[in-house]
Image (cartoon, rainbow, N blue to C red; front, side, top):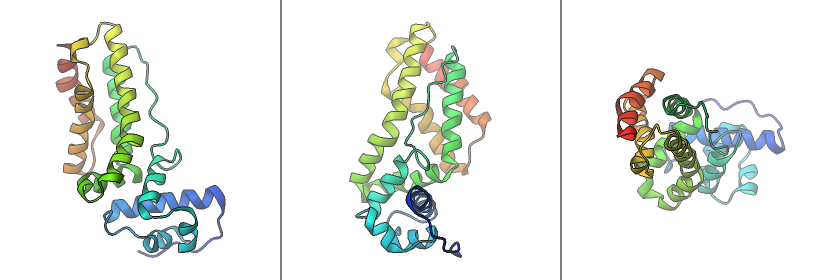
Length: 195
């Protein structure tokens, strides 16, 4: 890979370039292979810029994944369409599109090798996955209030089924189409949640 030409960036522009390079490098390789050397080269900056800001690649990965501009720093907004089906399709379509971006592709090696860095995995779970799951639980709670979902079937486990199925599909096929989201909603989630 040819590094981009060196440009003198500062502040948020430099941080964004480093975050994006981190996510792209992680997605391309693995967490075990990730280094400040590789990230600095990919970002077109010197290693010193990274060492001044983060104490380790683990801290940098967490910063990149939780950054609102490059990562998952902003949880999804509940669609509030008034329909459980439409809300689920909107949320899960956003999820599969994110899986195809650097931030989503960077999650794959972290999930696959979570046993090598369980502390980082736990922190990513709490700061990236849990907020998105809370939004999904809110959508399901709204559906219960509208009579579209059985309250006994709305649990964290049932809320995680759609994202898990789509994540496995993304691993299997490398990309998930919107039609697959509709099939997961119509064939799995709606029958499960409505009882």
